[in-house]
Figure 1: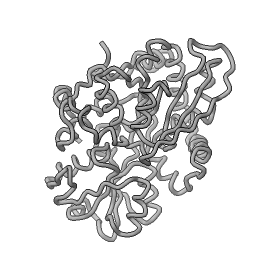
Figure 2: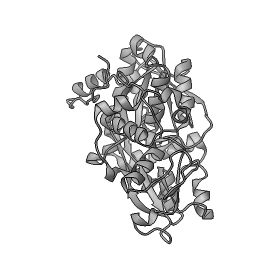
Figure 3: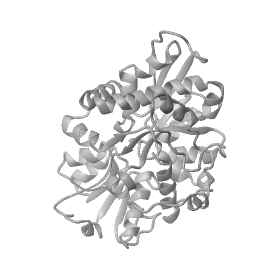
Length: 369
């Protein structure tokens, strides 16, 4: 997937605030349109930081496994000491942004599209992206009886999660690079793009109403468990096989008033990712245990094994790929020009990484000055 320039991004993003489709987009990490706000306080021990409580939001999804595992294993709370961790879970990006704007949460794990839309709607006043969390975990899975090669996708019915969401934009960009024509709004053209909620996509595939889907995990692996085959892993289209799927955002107000608490959460995130990499099987089981607690049902072994292997848990927010995703949305006619200058503040993360003897990460020119 071709790299894009910073200039293109800044031309390419200024009216996202006027585009409701991205506020509705789940940004690759939503698996439902309704918010579910579960709250849980974790016992705090040790020295209290500058805030009595920090309110953390995330989704019960594998692309948020850093949050799932860090919560389940008590890693965040250990770093927070006597500052109490209060957790809320959400099933959609817009509801988490609303909670951040309302002051119901202070820090959240969330995908790129709601991060972009939340920032632009507030004219750059509500949030900062302070870290990355996950890369990858998106696949084109197809009915092998109907689609055997990438060229066979032409003329078929392919599902994406929602008009204008991260996967929808990625699929439209891939179709364009194949030289095929699709009207972005209607989804009609050389390929029929059917916007289908991830929760119902497996049933749509089972019924034969779609021939495949460009979807995030664990939806992709759920389809594979029904007999679908992976035709393409989106990671293969990106430089170094990495692109942002989950960010860590923070309220600007909370960051200004409690930088020590933000640093503690980021230390927890960095240490959780280290633990996940060193203990993959234990971490996978930990994430699934938390999913069972939050949703009432764990993922089956076949589904979680396939999904887990395709997600990379990283601290770098991969800012350059956010630029690329925005440029693809512009190219598809789904975005006009917002200005994302200042969306990143990676100073707290880089402080944490430096203390751990790790190299700093880049904001690709979109950081606070």
